[in-house]
Length: 160
Image (cartoon, rainbow, N blue to C red; front, side):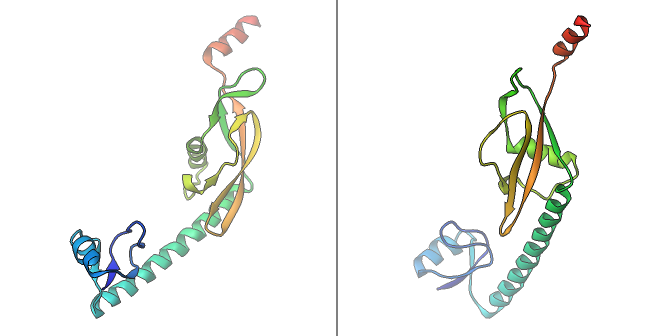
């Protein structure tokens, strides 16, 4: 039996795919749960329209991602974190912190799963991470600086 998938189905395919499945699986699982439609000529036309829509959305998303990476070449993303006197951070910089800094810089087309952090960022300084989506990739420079507590600032002011 041939079906058109209406949703992503694990170990079978993505939304919009046309798949050949066993009759029992198709009838009792996919069709019963609304995960697929039986393939008819009308449904086939719907599948083609869905595929074209998905391809155009993918192209737009890829170009927006590439533009975001080009905009980042000139910028340093600054992240403030608490650190000890030797420059070691108390907690590694996370992908969520990097995304928050990117959004503050006006770059919103990069997602958490696009960031490839090869090793944890645990020291103050400038670090480079990679952002990759599909075949498009680029480097992002991150400047990690210390964030002084109010109590530390007060102590320094008292000494002066």
